[in-house]
Length: 448
Ligand code: CMC
Image 1: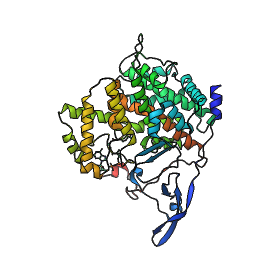
Image 2: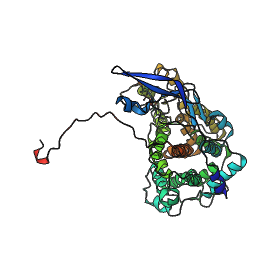
Image 3: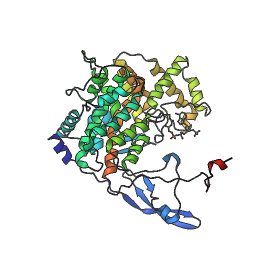
C-alpha cells in the first residue's frame, strides 16, 4: 500500500531551459561562430558549445572541469562568491534549524517538502527496507578486520544489486521509490555492520521503532544485551551532519554518479561508484585528514603556525586540510553551521577537546594570512565536522562513511534526474591527444 502511494508521486518536475536572445561569438582562423547562451533560474549563464566541434572542428579543454557545466540540474543551488547553498530553493540555514535529515532527503529526491502523510509513507518505506538480505552477512565475513569501511561500503552497495535483481532496471520509475528507500536505509545498516566487523563485534540489527539517525547509533554502539543510551543532543548533532552533507551539486562524487548513470547502469552501481570517488582526501576523505592533521599538530606541540607555513610551501606536499573549495570563494555556509553545532555539542557533553582549540587557532591564523586571503581559502564543511564525530565516539575511519550516508539522497536525486531526462546522452568527454604520433609495431626480436 505504502509503495503504491509513493509510486504514484513519481513525476518529473520541469525546469525549462531559458535560451537568451544574446549569443556568444567565437572567432577561429578568421571564421566566426555564433554560440547560444543559456540562463539558469538564478541568473547564471553558460555558453552552449554542444555544436562547436561539428561546425568548427574544435573542442574546448578545461582541466578538472573548473569552468564546465556538465549538466542542467534543478536540485541544488550554490553561489560560491556569496556563500549561498540551497536545496530545491530552500536555504541550508533554514533546513539546519528546523528540518531533519529524512525530511531533507525527501525534499532533495522528490523536489518538494513532504506533507505529514508523505513523510510518514517515506519513513515507513525506509523502515520496511532497513534489513540487509541475510546472505549479505557472508560477504562481511570475507573482509579482513583491517579493511577500510569505505572499501566495504562501496563493495556491499554494489553487491546489493545481486540480491535485488528485480530492482536493477535503470529507467523504471515504478521501482525507483523502493530502490531509493532501500539504498538510503541500507547504507546506514551496511556502514554500522562494517564498523562492527572491523572491531570483531557481533552485528546489531536495526530497530524499527527508532528513527533514522538514532537507529544508526544503536547499530553502531549497542551491545547484544544492553542498548546504547541515546542522548538527544548526540542524535541531533549527527542528524545535522547527515543533513548538511545531503547534496552539493556537481562535486567529484555526484558527477561520477551521473557519469555512471548516463550509461544506464543501475542505482546501486552508480552509488557504489560515488562512494569510491568520495573516498579521496581532496573530497570526502578530507574529514578524516583534518583530524589526522590536527592530531599531528597536537603531538608535535605546535600551535599550528609551523603547519600553516608548510601548507603555504608548495614543495612541502602539505595542504591545510578542511580549507579551500572549488566553488566557495567565501566561508562555506555549512562550515559556519557545523562550527556552532560543534561548540554546542562539546559544551553539552562537557568535552574539552584540544583539537578544537587547535582548529580555531588555525582558522584565525589562516584568515589573517595574505596567502589564504588572496586565494580565497576559507574553512569548508570538513574542517569542524570531525571534531563533532570524535565527540560522538565515531572512529576516525568511519568519518568519510558518515559523509557517504549523508550524501546518498543527493546521489539518488542526481541519478533520478539523469534517468528522467528524455534527451539524456551517455557522458563521453573528448581529449586532446598528446602521445606518440603513428608508431608502427616492431616485432620483439627487432627491438633495441
Ligand atoms: N592549503 C593550502 N593551499 C591551498 C589549499 C589548502 N587547503 N587549497 C588550495 N590551495 C592553493 C593551491 O595550492 C593553489 O595555489 P596557487 O594558485 O598558488 O597554485 C590555489 O590555492 C588554488 O587551489 P586549487 O588546488 O587550484 O583549487 P581546486 O579548486 O583545484 O581545489 C580543493 C579545491 C578543495 C581540492 C583544495 O582547496 C584542497 O585541496 N583543499 C584541502 C582538501 C579539502 O579540504 N577538501 C574538502 C573539500 S570540501 C568537501 C568536499 O567537497 O569533499
